[in-house]
Length: 117
Image 1 (cartoon, rainbow, N blue to C red):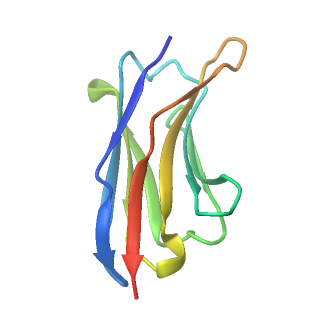
Image 2 (image 1 turned 120 degrees about the horizontal axis):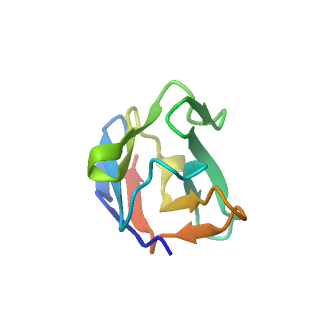
């Protein structure tokens, strides 16, 4: 069982930056993937960024070049650095972990990001 706690959300003006953190209750080094999703009001949850065991990263086209996912295995924490934020980035951001065995999904409670124009 993995518990995830996000932090770092808030209110920022367009063009600003935020860094989200996702602290895991256990080791993240053995997890298959760590992901950041987001869900805007009235929209489906979408995958924003993926870190595959720290060996590769992938991004949604809408955030490519602006967002960076990274991990610190020693702190069991994953980060999402968000730069050049746009109003359309406004959403609740969720941390997700996928276990190596059975591909079990674990979710955090979410953190709100609001970008004003």
